[in-house]
Image (cartoon, rainbow, N blue to C red; front, side):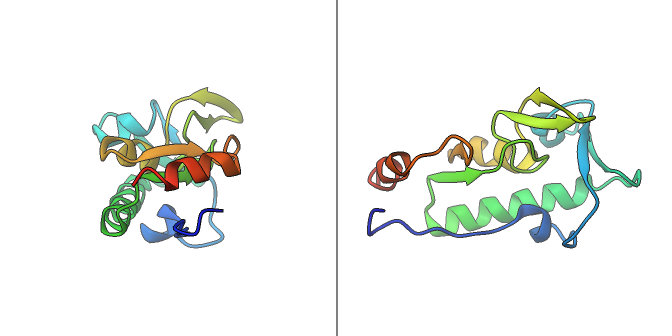
Length: 129
């Protein structure tokens, strides 16, 4: 690992005010991009609209990334917050980003799936500064 590499673990859903553990949620009728554009919502398995918490968490994560000068985020695919290439919808993988990954991408942060990252990737991105 590069000596300049700093990892900041965070959970956008917790930053948005949701508890751990929490019931699963999914993006209804779209992707994280659509949530950011007010075209879709995030609904948990109890039928509650948790869009506000997902948006708040994404904005808080983006603030932290900006404050820390982060240019790369390692995210977890299949998540309605952190999905990079895929999000889960009714137990199936669909193409698209989660809410936080979509916002970070709009803010110029390169998002990488934790499923696809290697130590070489981390070294590469940590030396771009």
